[in-house]
Image (cartoon, rainbow, N blue to C red):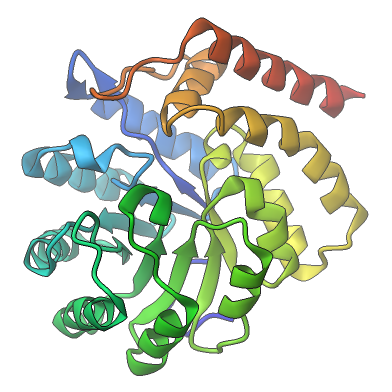
Length: 300
């Protein structure tokens, strides 16, 4: 269930950041945004984990955010990724994101510092109170941050602040998914594509996906149908279509596999920032095979 001030529903795609020659490729970014809007994507994340946010300078974040929001031009809601080890740095990023016109903030837990539950409540309280009119999605991805935002803490924050409207949860644990559900103040979004089907079966509001970069129409259709009736036969068909691609895109450090896949599919720049490196031949072969399998299943 979503609060009335939450514009995010359905298939939300976490965009990679296109680089050419070490700089942001603004033309590729604009083309990618148009591609998604034309193919049914219902929201975009700009400058999140898939967007290599940790490798962007503050100046580059401003450029990326500004160009993306300007090109989207209100056609779909845009979440800007924020987060830092300290609360003060997170608030600096939030101020900049709100000034750029973000429709919402995707706020990852403080990484490296690894606060306890009290610290997390204080951190997110400061953020929510600083921007009371901006929807905030909590972002829990403990395998990246070392910090696990527990369901009890999530519910406490959602019940306390009207602008904390949801959470992107990166888990494959059914008990964790179930523990997050049922709060009318909290929308839950699948944050791990390998658990996408489980989230939707348990009542998720939508998903923030990587796979949607490659297959936006099928991903959006699956999420939309599953949110109404997860037992729909078409949902089962779409699961079979997407499963090999989702598996292949999970084989390397994100966004290495998705950038390789997008390069194969439509000439998207596969360049990454160190310490990430381009996909090795074996991984590219697995991705190519998964794409071929998807096409084969689709035409069967």
